[in-house]
Structure formats: structure tokens, C-alpha cells
Length: 200
Image (cartoon, rainbow, N blue to C red; front, side, top):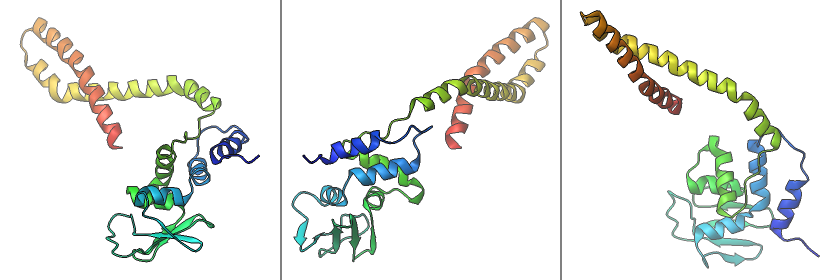
């Protein structure tokens, strides 16, 4: 009895040893094993657009920035690869996904993950050791985050609010204003640190 492609995929996946995290290479390898290039090409070209010519399949190129007037996009199922003779791009199923969905070379793993998602395959799960590591490192990450927010609060207070507090003549008003302005820096500092981390 032969296994379906999805069963074979899950059998290979379950036989692998546990790893600390999901590596880029694992995601790429699983996407290559799970999705044949002909299936992605058929999805991109549209139903009924691929024509068989001997051992290969041809269609108009579905890749962006290529207005193909005659079928120059060729899929070779035996080698699980493609090549477009019009735009001179080719490769495996990951490269086809990368070209089709606009990922650059640094985002190959993202293209592979998107490919798995598109064909209803689960991405490789993170092992229990990864979650244990996250739990161990949680307090350190929280402390670092708190230190960043505290440093941002101090800078905000000194730069924008301290001159206003020092300009107040009455000592009681000055202490009140200092507490109010210091409390006001908390939310501003958290937002500032969050924005800086998104840009990094």
C-alpha cells in the first residue's frame, strides 16, 4: 500500500530528532518535500493553463514583471524544477514561490513557510526544548525591556519635563509637577522603545 504525499511528509517529519528551534533549512527542506513545483505552477498559472508536452509542462509565465505572449514557462516534474525561457528565471519550488510572491533572497525561509501555508501543510513545530528555553530566558528579557524603558523615561523627563519643573517657583508645585511628569513618561517611554525595536 502506497502512502499519500501528505502521509509520507508527516512520516519523514516525525522521524527527525528533536532540535532546539526550527531552522530556516528545516522549513525550506520540508516545503521542497511537501509541494511539487507542478502544483505551485498550476496554482499560479490558473486551472487548465498548463499543457503537457512530452515529459514537461508548459504555460505562459505567471511571474510578475513578465508579460508572456507565448508559452515560455516550462515545468520539469521529473527534476521538480521550472525554467522560463522568456524571463530566464528558474529553479525549484521555493524559487518559484519566491519570484511569484516577491520575496528577496534573504527571505527564502519566509517563502517556504508561505508555500507550506498555501498548500495547507503545518510549518515544522518548535520542540519542547525551545519553549523551555523561552521560559528560562523570559525573566532576563523582561529585565532588559524594563531597563530600556527606564532609560527612555529618564531621557524624556530630563529633555522635556525637567526644565518645566525647575521653572516652577513654588516648592510644593514643583514636587507635584515632578511626580505628574515622571508618571507621564511611562507610557511615552514604552511606546518609544516599541517603535525603536520595530525599526531595528
